Each structure stands twice: as structure tokens, then as C-alpha cells.
Image 1 (cartoon, rainbow over the protein chains, first blue to last red):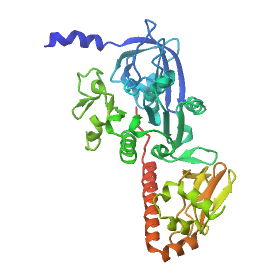
Image 2: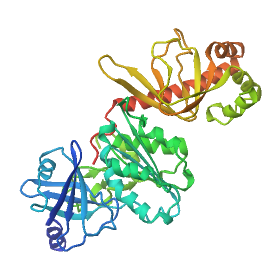
Image 3: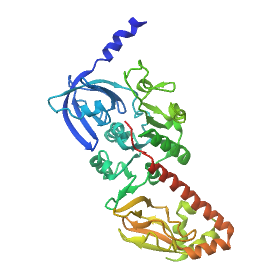
Image 4: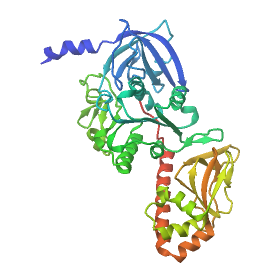
Length: 283
Length: 155
């Protein structure tokens, strides 16, 4: 048995060096690395993630935040939370490399959602894994009916990709609303949780695919609101999960979530597959 | 705006869905339509709550004045949402200030007349209190979520 899987595992466990092209500070603790694939091209689907290796420090799973149609570079948006992510934030463009394994995981259901309304709901840095889906929808605009992006974050200073959100907000073919939890005078946008935005946009719940990404509490509350308030079927609501992914290929078991391995069964799941697990403490 | 116009406006709002025409007449008879420019204070925290509002168009920020800090926006309300329930219970004081974020059109209900109408017609009063309670529950739930770190530690 070992002889069957061992060569594959060794190959998939080897990071490939990608040159760092740019480092862009997005927020006070969040930055985006733009990486250059060594063979000139990198293929992935919206919603997939990679294992990003800071050489000599360690490896972390990071969602891809760039457009899948832009194959000559790869963007990964990262929050500084520990030793590896802090180290990744110190790389020097044009000089340093980071290791990449992947892409891994399941994608957002962009093909299945064709001909339907798209309701894309992000919370905090959860907008990063959704951005490739938004790019895809805009690049293939005729494939979808209404496209709605709802984004919630803590304060006006915590709005990720704000310039792009504002740009999308100016377009006629996509509805974009932003809300924050707290603000002082000077902020003229919405204040309140992101679920309060749902009632302000038009979509057909019977013909909508929702893609939701944020902390688990935010995804749970949002999915419940869509199901209870708008009678959306749970199989049309997709969430993306994060657990402590280590191998990325379903071998180590670090990312087990109930009967699922997030890295290979997800990270994007229909709510029908994981919704019941949100209710179990300790899972 | 005359009472027919007000009834039409109210009839378009989900908050008043499925009320009987005669109940709508009672409610509309206590109401008037008011327009505000942007940045106008509709009512002030601690002030006498003498009216209920329904936002027909525009946006309103609920603000809390915190000493030594700027006015803190607690929540914003938008088209189709009711504004304020301090008028419903003694001591009839506003807990927040309400300020328009943009030109805003509201229906303003006279609180004393509204309370009197509900006292006179318990069926209408009970129905309206249920609707306000639902709004309060929903806003309280949303506020609780704002208190937890709703957007922290994701991806």
C-alpha cells in the first residue's frame, strides 16, 4: 500500500519556489503577495487555495485572491497572525521566493451557477477567497443573471480591497454594498451586520447561488438568514471552511471536520454537507 | 400629502402588509410625510419621543454620543424600515439620536395619536405591537452579532 501512494505524496509535498513580484499592504495586518510562477503559468479555479511556504519557517494554507484568468501571476492575501504569516510579510519583491504547493481544494460552483443570480457575501478577510469568483462573474458576465456582492467588516478602516469594491459599486452590472460594525460620523455607508444588507438587494431566491465566506459564525448566521428569511435551498448555499490544513492532500488529518477533510473535500462546500457540523461544539 | 396618498405609501411597505383597509385609515390619519436633507438630525438622544417614523426613501444613522469621542453610529436604517420605538413605552425618551445620511423621505406618525388609536382598538394595537416587537427582536439579534467578533479570524 505504501508503495502505491508514497511517490505521489513526496511529489505533492514539495513546494515550488515562486518569485515575489510585489507586496501590497492592504490593511494594518493584511497584505497581498503577487507571485511569479517559475514556468510562467499557474492554473487554478476560483475558491482554491495553496500551501504557502516561508522557507525555513513553515507553511500555511492561503486562499488565492487573484483572477483565475490571469495565469502569469498569482495573488495571495494574508493576515499576519503567526510566525509564518509574519515572515511572509517581510519578503522583498524581486529578491525573495516563497514556496507554493497546489492549487488544492474544491472551487466555487461557477459552472453550476450559470444562468442564475449570484449572491456573494463576504466578511472581513473572507472577501479574499471570494474575489476570484467575482472576477470570474465579471469576466463572464453573460453567464449569470444578477450579480450581488455584500461585504461586512469591523470598521471603515478594515475594508479589504476598498478601491475595487468602490469600482464595482459604480458599475451597472453588479450590485455592491458594504457595511461595517462600527463607525463615527464621516462614514456615510451602512452600519450593521452583513445579513442586514440582504433585504436591500434584489435577487430571486429560487434561482440564486449564494457563496459565503467569513468566520464560521458569520457563515452560519448568513446561511440561516438565507434559508429562513428567503427560503433558499441549502444546496444552493456554498461556504468555504478553514481548518488547520497541513498536508493539503488529505493524508495528515489535521483539517478533519466531522467526517470531512477540509483540504480535499472542501474547502468550498455546499451548506448541506457541513451545516450540521457547525452546530456541534468542538468539531 | 392627503390620506389616500399616505395609505398608498404605507401600502407599499412590507411593515404594513396584510393590515385591513380600515386599520390603514386609522394609521394614516395619524401620519404625515416629511422630507429631510442630508445630515439633518431627526431626533436627539434623550429627547422626548413624540413620533414614530417609517423610512420611505434614504438612509438614517442611529447615533450614540460617547463622552470625549465622536458620535458613534450604532446602526443605519434604510428604505422600508421603521425608525424608533422610544415613543412606545414610558418615559418616552429617545435612546439614540437619528441623523439622515442623505436626502431622506419618511412617514412621521404622531406618537400620542398612535397610542390612543391602539388603546381604542386592541386588535390593531396588538397587531402593531407584534410587528414592532419583531423589529426589536431582529435589531437586538443584529446588535448582539455586532458585539461579538463577527468578522475576526477568517482565512
